[in-house]
Amino acid sequence: MARYNSQGVGAAQQQQQGGGGSGGAAAAGGNGGDSLNGHGRTSSKNGASGGQNSSTNGNKAGPSNANTTTTIAEISPIGAANTINGPAHHRNGNAGHYPNPNLMGSSGGALGATNGAIGGVGSNLYTGHWKLTRVFNENDEALINRKLPKELLLRIFSHLDVVSLCRCAQVSKAWNVLALDGSNWQKVDLFEFQIDIEGIVVENIARKCGGFLRKLSLKGCQAVGDSALATFSQYCNNIELLNLKYCKKISDRTSQSLSMHCHKLQYLDVSSCSAVTDISLHALSQGCPNLIHLDISWCDMITGNGIKSLSEGCKKLQNFIAKGCMHIHDEGLLHLARNCKDLRKVNVQGCRNVQDEGVTKLAEACPNLQYLCVSNCSHLSDTSLLAIANACPNLTTLECAAVSQFTDTGFGALARNCHLLERLDLEECVLITDSTLSALSACCPRLEFISLSHCELITDEGIRQLGMAPCSSEHLIVLELDNLPLITDASLDHLVSCHNLQRIELYDCQLITRAGIRRLRNHLPNIRVHAYFAPVTPPPSVGGTTRRYCRCCVIL
Image 1 (tube, rainbow, N blue to C red):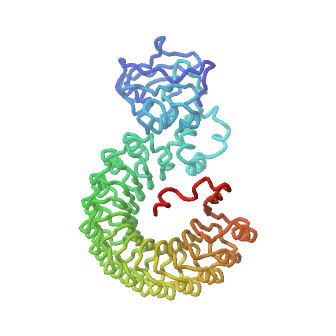
Image 2 (image 1 turned 120 degrees about the vertical axis):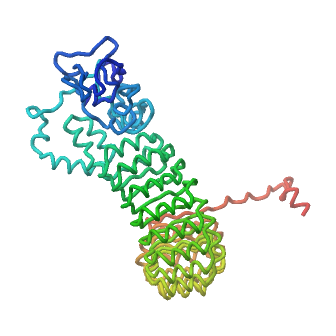
């Protein structure tokens, strides 16, 4: 690992263009010439920091005493990939060891240096003020390298995350080779570094990992565009999971590249990529037949035509998420029902044009459906609930917030037929009463999460039945009761037997008091209670000189 001198000087000086061959300083990725510092050509008698690093035949550098180990800079635009500026120039001498500049509070390190991208844990060619430990060889390797087989060390490295691998790559030449082995980069998540990631980083990762890479998350990396992902698709054609959420620069070109090269793709998330259109779905249908999970939420240019193409080519689809896709109608759901019989999870939250016909056909064609979200699909009625109840006995989660036409009739049928229900979001289902809670209490023993917020017809009697149900004493974890004007402290007393209850929401429950909450906490000391109590109105002044009402109230 590189050590720093007492003056804390930064990274190696920039590499100058010289007479060496094109492959000179190959490990550093400079301009192929000799390595120069401010005082001329570097050299060292003990071989710790100097060494001539030129080449006459265009191959890798010839004899060299410098520690020119390959670092993570090979997969970043800093160091190896930067042929203009040569080795990365760190501003602070203590920045090169930390992949995240926030750890050291400097702009250097693997995520800092000159352009703030991942990699670049230091220059490949350390000269001048840098003091380097000698590269391990067969005679003087560290004890751990002598005692453990390389295969075992490689297996250990395979359990490390990106940051840890970057750090290990700086320890020694032997560890550098092990840490950057493609087999250790089968799963890469760059969400933590989203601000720093640019397209060139993705391209270099692709070249380094190649066919080893199986899972890549670029969530939030808004600087990454189609060009980088086109290169990625060519090199990493064994990719199975790709998360591009919030990558707003990508368009249909990315999906076309994936279709051409990544035929093993199973999981794709392009949510909030507003430039994605039906063309993407058509491309995926032609080249990604193994797709089982697709998230196109907030891609508001997707229509039923794209869904048709997708369903015809990706018949193995199990999870379809399309929140906020306003142009998806019943026609799109009909195509899914016709071609994708193995759907397990469907989310069409906010698709306001979806109606009973589409949901009914989908439920009847997909008996394995386990998760369904139709929140804010305001045109739905009990017809949809009855179809779900009759055709989807394996349903475990139903989210139907703000579907104001659902009534006790639909939920009663659902409770009687879907005994595996675990999560129910009934917020703003304003027509339901205590009858719904009675049916759920009697027939759904596995309920863990229930939201009844803004269901203003619920009373203490409904909460009493829920509190006495088998699900309450064994499974119920979260209960949301915001804005229920008819419940009182008696409801809280009915919940004392819910031993697993961890959180209860009581915002704007005007008849709930602090005393009732204290009693509940005495029985359930670990429960988190979220409630709000309006400040007490101050009494009128004794002298009567101050008005009790504002001027507007007096006029009224």
